Image (cartoon, rainbow, N blue to C red):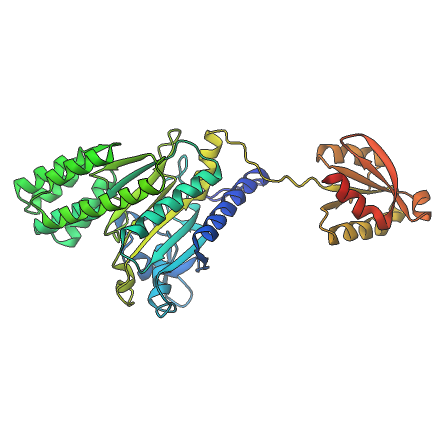
Length: 432
């Protein structure tokens, strides 16, 4: 018989990994609380049109899309932003702005599986809707930094760019949106030669091509210096100049709020999603060459879905990628480990009593596991040791007649007889 395996690009998380994933998710929820983001839950299956609208060619080609039994074309969500924008365009359209929304869950893309890239992956997603001011962008970056720190990652760097700079030049050169999208797709993959070829064939001026070429090769950690050079390069493109100013304001706000940020400004940086209109960013650690988080400003998406014009900025954090980064950095995760109390009946006539005592402890919030294999006490004690149980309760005939049980402290290897009605109190004292 052939052994079943997970479908390609999907994976199982064993208890230890699941524990780390939940820890990261917990930190994301804490971050949402700290910054006032309210959680929403959106469906995993959405209409294909919604997901394809502004996803970008790369994502469109890799969607899990299918017809449901009613003949509707649907897709597993490849990202969260379109779903959130749909909600804000419809059900939440009259909510007071700004809206701070948070969601977390699994997403699906038919990518080639490799390190840190799977077909099912997890993200926490934060969207700030309704403000086009630089402090909104700065908040999303600061929130991301706080989250990464709280999880325990070290040496994170922000790679930052601005779609407005590149798009303004392409627009002023008279390039249609479709051509702009193709150019940005290539730039996202760092295929700069191909990108410039598309621009040239679409009839851009030599000056336009030179300008793009200069931007593509410009990046550095001294933000002020890079911004100054960007200004010089785009000086004949008024909208691009405004975009550089906008980037400068955001970075200035960020660094004043938290001077310890590591930022690399990359003038030729593009991301695969087509809906970005302003700042874009990704987060990295030195140990991995994949982004742990990414986001940016998108001012036209809600409107595209039939809502009011609503400027917005958001970020997605890769939960499974952050787990990978924590493993690479060998970060000790300080999660409270629950060490159970094991309940062992000495013979099967006492099984019901063992279950009753376990329920009594659980009612007092004490984790309890009952011996359900009917093993001898000595074997059951070995099992308790292996499970790193903090205490063992031995239910015996003799003690029961006195309304008592034997309580064994597994660390100290000491045991005492304790009245059943005092058991929970005694355990709480000993455990704390």
